[in-house]
Structure formats: structure tokens, C-alpha cells
Length: 403
Image (cartoon, rainbow, N blue to C red; front, side, top):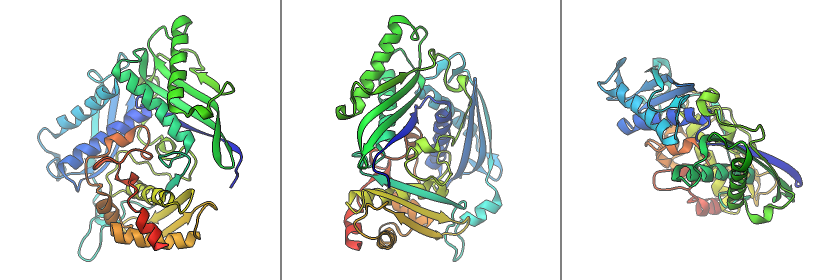
């Protein structure tokens, strides 16, 4: 593992068109799970100028059964979509929560997929698809996340909070950030470059208004990034193209699942390729990525490694994972194969195993808890009641004892 290098990660705000799509898809997941904890959902969203389109497959008691919608169900779906866009803050000519056109093309889940996923007789619930999933943790920040991504998220979160509170009334919802850090001996020592592009009110691309916007962004960066990492040598690129008035779905179409690196580890870890938003927890793209983060985070929190990558693999309709792989990148206090055995043992004892049912029940995933995950990352967040249970560090003692 290299010890001296530059590394960069990016984030996008809740108003980015792809993130608008993610948040709508997860609002639909939450709506259906609030009606039926065993609902099956695969909801994709397209956003563009004054248009939101839903497509995908569902099964939900009391909402969509036997090929038909329950009375009022489609109105609830449309309300969830418009409420999401309103919460984000889009009231623009090119994208407005109240006047946008809406299409619902959701339909019933394939019976051939259902027969592989559903438990029956002696068959346990199977994975909703084949695939590989990765979890990761490192000791670069208190959240046990890559510092470049953690800071990129927090810059945009702070700007969004100021926009919603009225503290920064010149901001509009769409924004992107990017943080480059210099690492020495594997630790971040300096921020070499900060990029922030934010949609703004008219007139904030010139003169005193532009200067105010630039000063504001630098003040947010100073709030988020530790002072020891910032210096006069830090290079800022703030709205480097100049004007950024047209943004969101009016400026660029958005699709669910196009920000998978922003959603996970900012490129610091491998990614299996599957997106999260719009999927119920029988889809291991989502639930297995959550449980591997949970396990990796507990390994690092236990002091068993400074960096930990975990991979699992599944086959559609098969309950047990095909493989479990652990890599501590030379930072582990025990051999990686010993950690694999310890993780498998602890997962079986504390979760009921790494089957889709074990993950879902062990982490309590059959609940409407997904809308908050759809912006500013699925990981490195605060475990709070039912929300973000994969961020808990309650396996530390069990892992230490198992080694």
C-alpha cells in the first residue's frame, strides 16, 4: 500500500439531478414498506425538465396486488414524488414540484424472480439477484470513512442546511464538491485542492455578489475541514465555469443509481457495481453492501485494522453467500483469514448469518428508513434509532473475542 500520495473524492448535493432521482426512488421504497414490510420494490426514476417518470417492478399488499392498484394508491405515489421535490427546494420554471408532469410506469414483479426470492417449504429466502458487494472502513476520520469523501459530503450538507435555513439565500439546490488531500505515511496532512460548483440566484456570477458567494464557500470549507489541513497553498476552484443558474433536472437529466461512488467510499474502495436507491432489502445490492460496511466498520473500531475491505458474493435465489473475502491492506493485527473466520462466526451469532433474511432481520431493514440515505452518502452517517443501523459499532467486543 502506498503511503505518500494525492487522493480525490467528490460528492453531489441533494439537488443534483441524479440525487433527485435517488431520493424519489427511496421515497417510493419507504412508502411501500410503510404499507407492507415484506413489499418488493425496484423503482427507477428519470428526471428532466418539468418531468418525473417512474419505472420498475413492485409487489405490495394493500397497494398493488393481482395486477391492480388499490384505490388512492397512485395518488399517494404522486404525492410522495412531489413532496420529495418540494423538500429539496425546487420551485423553478424548469423544475417545480407543483407543476411538473408525472408518469407512473411501475408494474408487478416478475413471478420468475419472486419464486427465487420467496421462502417456501424447506427453501430459505434467496438473494434477489446475483452480484458482488463490498464494505469498507478506515481510520482517516471519526466516522471511519475516507477523509476526501467525508469532507466532500459535509461541505454540501452544510451549504444545504444554510440554504434551507435562509442563512445563504443566494444558493439554489444543485451543487457538487471535490476534495483533494495529500497523504503522508497513509495519513491526510494537507488539502491541496477544493472544488465547489453551486447553483445560485441570478447575479451571483459577477462583481460583489460573486465575491460574496466565493467568500461564503471558503467559510463553509473552513467549518468542515480541520484547520491543520488548510493553508495559503490550498487551491480553490469555485464555480470554475462562471455562471451556474440553470441546474438540477432542468440543466441535466437525472437517473437513479448513477452516483454509486458518491454513495459509497469515494473511490477509496472497490465497488460491486450495484446501486442502492429504489430497492427493497431483499436486493443484496443494498442489504449486503450495508452489512459488509457494518462488519468492516466494527473491525476498524475494534482496532483490529486501520483499513478493512470486505467482499461477499451471491447467486439469485440462493440464500447463503458464495464467498466472503477480507483484506486489511497490511494494517491488520491478525491474519486476514483469521478475520474472515471471526467475521463469519460473529455474523452468524449476532445476525443469524449473511443470508438475505439474516441481514434483513439482524439489521432491522424492513422499515421505511431509506429516504435519508439517498443524499450525502449511505455510510459514515449517525446511527439513530431505526436509521443507519449498519453504522453501529456494537460488534467490537464480539470480534475481539473471536480473534
